[in-house]
Amino acid sequence: MHRSRVHALLSDVPQDSAAQATGFWSAALGVPPRHDTDEPEFTNLPDVVPDLITAIVRRATPRPPGRRPGRPQCPVTRCTAG
Image 1: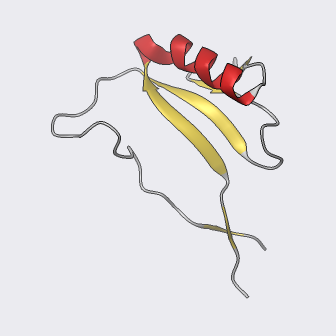
Image 2: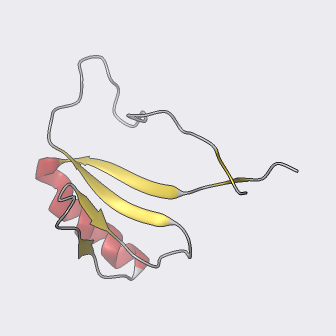
């Protein structure tokens, strides 16, 4: 039987809005942010949901021309549990 699951919840934000977005999501979810020194573009919001990666991703480059706000920057993929 096939089972799909969500692996990560990422909020992709412009670099100049990252601190504000991190503060908002940290307060809304009730968890302190954890900054990753190995991957500085990610700020984790750990233990929101067990086994779900929750993070703010700082986008250093501007949105490509023609890309509408709110559209995913990458395709949604399905993961399967083994």
